[in-house]
Length: 484
Image (cartoon, rainbow, N blue to C red; front, side, top):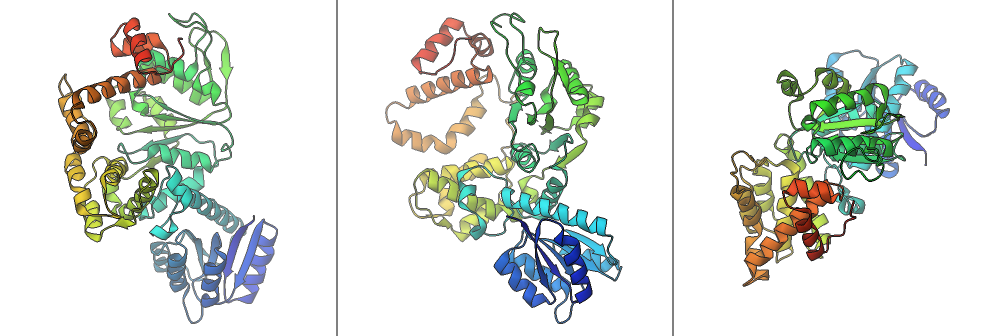
């Protein structure tokens, strides 16, 4: 299906000229000469991009722009004028225009602007640029998506539309829980590599030696228990996109090898001499200040500048509060469907409470609060009482300070258990101690195996237990893993 381009201008000659220019492109053209007809077209045909003249009879282009954005917030509008005034540009961009061009048109610039606007529109329809509950569609509920229509997020959508189809290295910065991996996936989904692999690696979750093997692979006999050759993520991802989360946690040794991949797209497997050539786009993310790490000699300066060819900053949720109601609606639908509950929405007082919360854990915190409230909700509307205990438990929670948590991690587990403890008590009367201990041990064993790629030697070392003990727990909890 071809993209739809609406052209609104009261000058018949300009309409015909633009019709001639864009008829050679793959667009379905919608031509209008007055604002009311254009608005009806937008409502009926949902064009992807519109070129609108500011100076129109009866209703100005700015007024049409404002009404058009109410009908379809995702419409990418390019405003055009023969009057080169700063105020016109400010007004147009303030009311949501994608771009602002002056007449007579530079046709090269106009075509480029339409192409960028189309990329942004198509991306926003995938990554869900919406303003109200009615625009949240079924596929949004079924999977994790990035969503938002605040000014900060609109700028990010526009930037994604501009850079997604290039092969430029991307650095995404932002606090934990702001959706960095979802943004990486949005870039990937709108790139020409979208039909090739997308692989994500958390650099903070793996020990240094294991991360090197995970990224670059290893040869048989490279180290103890390397019984066969292993292909690393860069090789697996050849032709595609790799997402490296928490890049600031990578050791200096691995940073050097990674820099070589960025510069030359080549590396050697651990214990190998063969140079492997790949074609991989890199998207990296961090919740740290890499510049501060550079100053502390914990991160290579050359790698830092090589990474930030394109740099995104994801704002914390507290700085985009107008997105909270939309996120609440999305998560309520998602978890109501997951738990088979007929929850119609959130009471006004409860929504006000949710909007006022600081969300130091960002979108992840909001999602977890909605998840927990949905589990325990007994009616068809979520009310303030459904959220109070969870918001209280989350208050002041951002990232667990492991140095301050003590050796027994009491604070960590208290915060995890407190919101769900009443439910555990109801479900496991008389067996709470045994159930929680077994659950924790099973989770630890399973997580260690996953982080170690099912390598029992690495997992046992990570946990600080013998391999025999690990095997016993794997059998006890029926955790399937290959004996590497």
